Image (cartoon, rainbow, N blue to C red):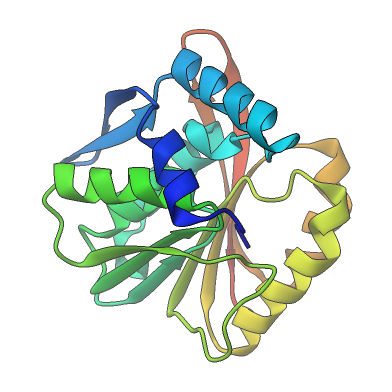
Length: 224
């Protein structure tokens, strides 16, 4: 869980320049407030200088897996209709913002409070009423946290966290939660994904193209 004081956090977060990116899925246009890359790098350097060390702000950009998850959601909106949706490790929260058009209620979360600040700005920008943003660390989930649908994208990038992450996903599966997991096709994550395949009810491959690159992502629908 983020241990910084709110005053320290907000002081630095407010110094990050913002950009507004627009994404379109089906008939919905979504505006996402994201940090300017150069400004975020300067902000990170100042945090390291002030604290001696800091978590790298991976939350500060929209990764291909988030786009792939949105593509899957837009093609399978029935999975979210009238559902309670939770996104963990959401970064700037693009899949949650799209889900709000279909779900009954959405909770978009990240362990980093600065990311949650940006999510809240995007919620206001899109004038969404059925979505909230919260600080939640999936390493320390509150007892009784449940959802009809759990969204996770590009969270299986650190092998040291795979064991804990697997336990978290099993916990939700045991609570009858449907999980939508999106991931780039990383070789190092193959053993982690193979553990989840017994719960896979549907799998789709989505190619995400950007100006500089293209990434093949896999989206899994997991259900016990």
